[in-house]
Image 1 (cartoon, each protein chain N blue to C red):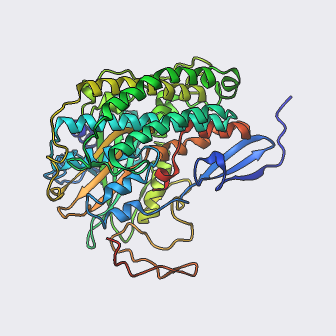
Image 2 (image 1 turned 90 degrees about the horizontal axis):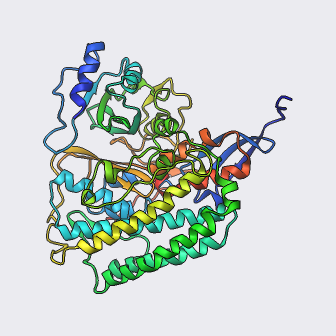
Image 3 (image 1 turned 120 degrees about the vertical axis):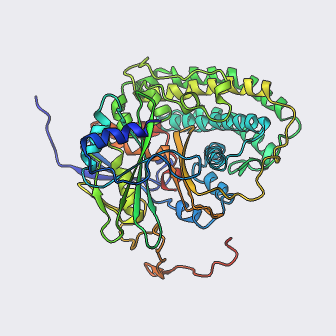
Length: 170
Length: 373
């Protein structure tokens, strides 16, 4: 597993970046180990993760936004992969719900452009430095951030009434 | 003589256009016939898949995965159930694993037949399309025989399958494979090695490997660029580690590595490899085993999360599932390979003619249902 090496790598260069939480596990399920990070310096860290010859995480597989709950933060999970070394790792960054902002990595991995737009579209997380932060799947005039747990459907959309009675849907 | 720049014109291709393979709009800036920039506008088919999943039990998600990549529903089911079983820690019977691989590979052939047939249409060859759909029809018949559905199967369940194989399925599949293998060569003669087709696709839309990796392009598109990366081989799931098959990668036979022709060629070779896999799986298929034996009475994974990747016909299809111990997913994210493939379009199509853009888009083999989710 590569994650302890990522933690070591980041700690040696940015001692402040990795918060002191229990690292290396995701809980009791057979999931993947992960690296928690603070949002500062994320852009520079990402660049070095990509370029370091021992890690060479040149492929960003996926960015997943998560709403951790009504009283908790939003979280962004990055799944990284190295085509050369065939290893992978996961980075998690929490941002507060009131000011959800973190640096964009669109300049590091090209695909981050679209992935970040999708996360912005669904969670309203602002990626500073993103070249074109617009909604991607929803219409541009959509209001609210649908995948947040406290999202409420609009009554109408362009005069079309959104049906509220949902009996028989389940 | 330098390049004369005229006034730029904005052209909309789609959202309703036969060559966009679904409801996709391409916002194209052109200088005469030359493309200077393309902005794909997506989301026309957005149906809140991920939001829906947070309100459905884990079993109810499966029919929704069918509808994401509707050309290769079996592979979508497969990815989801593999992820769920790892999260739950379920071991499924051997027979189930073999049947799943058989279905996944049949669906891979069917999906590639659609990809290659419609690609022929895109570049002006009508006949191969009809031939390929004839063979795809036989695969759909096999699926219909098995589970009653022709397109959206809901066949693979968490811990098992909806039905066991029907009587005569193995023989019918062998008959199909025996007929299909010689047909494959005929298609190659007809289209892949056709002079006109080569002229249209070789050296067009070159996708260099480093660009492909940076854009997260996977599957046949990445392998067309000469990178050997196939999850069936590199991170084997199910029983793929027991099967013997090759990973074809593009070599630039007709032009440059990573051109449209290479991507076509990789898909064509993959069909032959799938036939090889199918023959092995059918031969080793265990006779005993109950497909409902390992079905959990209640699907309720422990707290935790999983990111599981599988190889769909379009590339790395991954599910990120987060469970909080309740019977509905806390969060379910689908990483769609067609989404990443489409994002690279502007990069590789800029500088080409409008007619080449159709050829390049077709060679990426996108499915809008999966992009928009």
